[in-house]
Length: 253
Image (cartoon, rainbow, N blue to C red; front, side, top):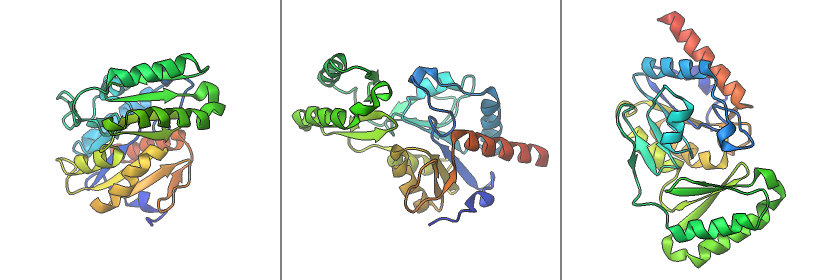
């Protein structure tokens, strides 16, 4: 298990930062579109990205297009939609790691489910579909059973479901934040550096599991994950660490 003091080892010259977005860098909101990205955070990330020679990436369930909108004007290396898309060069367009959109029949089944259930919100990311139930939290177990039944009916499509904070994400098998971390860490400028994968959700655990194979750490925010330290209680704490790290190296420069 990594040391509780592993953050003291962080060196922008030799390390890489791989950061989840919702619940890690920014506070969760009732609706996905209601989140707020503080301007100071954008400035600090921009500085660290430059100071680290580009070895800072966002690794999120959000699509890269949505991340660009949230962090505008900053564009960073990124993996979106749980490892389904990548952008290694901030100046380049995003590329997909999977073929085609999810089938319309799946969206139709999930739309019908949402229409007959209060408090559900569908987020169609094309390569994956999120079913949010924050407005009907008690529906979680029943909703998971309904989604599992839909996926069983469509088992030839080789789909899987992952659970997050009041959300179930349906995607193709074979890509997740673990494959995202692996792909990123094999590309310049990340290759050869020590990754710090920071995330708050169950979906981040696949990324945590891969980071040690590159000599790095998985760090949890706000929840206990066996084998990985919980060094931040909230997204506010992560932002404070990012700000302090940026400030320290601005002075050093």
